[in-house]
Amino acid sequence: MSTETDHLRLAADFAPATRDDWRKLVDGVLKGAAFEKFIGKTYDGLKIDPIYERARDGKVIPGRAATAPWQIVQRADHPDAAKANAQALDDLENGATGLAVVFAGANGARGFGLPPSKDALARVLDGIFLDAGIAIEFEIGPQSRDMGQHLAEILSKRKIAPSAVNVRFGFDPIGGAAVRGGNTGDWNSTAKVFSEKISQLAKLGFRGPFAAADGRVIHDAGGTEAQELAWVLAVGIDYLRALAAAGIALDDARSMIYARMSADADQFLTIAKFRALRLLWARVEQSCGLSPKPLFIAADTAWRMLTQRDPDVNMLRATVATFSAGLGGANSIDVLPHTLAAGLPNALSRRIARNTQLVLLEESNLDKVSDPAAGSGGIEALTKELCHAAWALFQEIERAGGAFASLEKNLVQDKVAAARTAHNANIAKRKDAITGVSEFPNLCEKIADIHTAEPVKLAPYGEDKIKFAALAPHRLTEPFEKLRDASDRMLKDKGTRPKVFLANLGTPADFTARTTFAKSFFEAGGIETVAGGDASHSASLAAAFKTSGAALACLCSSDKVYAEHAVPAAKALHAAGAKHIYLAGRPGELEAGLRNAGVNDFIVAGADALATLNAAYAKMDAR
Image (cartoon, rainbow, N blue to C red; front, side):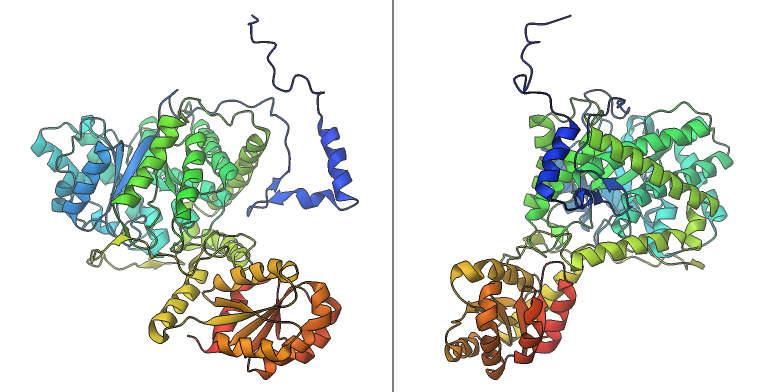
């Protein structure tokens, strides 16, 4: 049936464009260079083309119910349960629809969390109407494994039926063992306790889900998207088998399991990853003889992408991650407050985390379209490729005996370590630029305003009789932040930061580009830059260096100016006492002469900035 608007087609007055037309234009720009330079690769080795046609066979992947918003989850993680309660009430009164009740020792505690006691649980839930549709998710560790029973007792006192409460219990013994690097017993004994606890809660009337297959374990440790997906599948299968072995019907057992995944600032990969998990889990259900039904997927914005320095940029990262998880079909999203890496977030940080989701839902209406990525050529291709890569790794884990057995054999750890090494190399070389830290740092930034709170001291939980390599969480910017911390200590102890003198040769047109590059390069490591210089007068250049208070110097200008002035300038700086002299840019044929004049190193894009900065501190004896 036609409508009055059928003739109002976008770009109707332009001739149809084909991929061949686009390729001809690109080849004209390349001028003989290889087209492959435009093809990207993920850390899983998946190919990303520069352009995709619409996927004609794209289908909507069932996830959230039509037009249903995801749950807006806020963390209740203050070590003081009364203060955590006040924060939770404020969150719920101002738009949050769920709470992540985080206990000390949980994988997602991030250094804080509630005391693992019934009293703390009762206090944090005081005044919250648990049967009013609020979603509750427990993030538990070994010491808080009895929170389900404690909740049942609290509900009994309040005369609330367990079936009336929307609660996810977060049991994840395999994830906990992976992060700790060990377990108190073998998997069979742990699986038995795990199944018993879930069976008891189900008999009390709780609807669940109860067990979390938590992909954050992999993502936090530096793993890839396919590795995270494979881990979620493998852990989910181990839990499914444990529940079935305890006599629980498969159809009931699969409803007792949910997934947690990290959402980071790579928009397209994050959307594809969440879509891929639904397809992969449906494949598992079909293999079990079950008709697929949507898996509940909880999302956290990624811990590893948070920065301590320039934390306001974390708000932008969190917005992209939330957008991506929402479009990818997440059922709940927990936005980590942007100052969490610096300490316990204050009210403003929590409000921004909450409002990030509210704006995307209430103003951008991201929940109104089911699987909006369906049919997108690029995202459909990434989804399929992630499915293939993750399934292959999942099969490898299965051949090793499952998730827990693969930990014992260090199979998963070795693969994650390789990915982390690749990540770290690109971070060090600033190929994976992190705004505010490795690029565009600000040495004068204000310290993040956070709460002061003493973390809970946990009693020991048994001895790990089985030990293996731990999948320890880390943030990508930690190596650069260590250098910034060293700079801050020097400022506090000596009244000045480590400095490098930028010897600007020629006119601003000559040196501005490389001076800007050098400033960002050195200040990423906390080394303050002091600019000055006069290429035509070596004596004044040397005097400027001496008055700068710097121990290091870096020549900055164009290749043309370097050819004429770099050698005498380097000699002057060396004679003035520079401990180490750099030159911004590639020296080319001038290298031998420059080194003879005293230039020690050349800073260029793509070089190992982290190694250069660490070496600079050693030369200054600044640490």
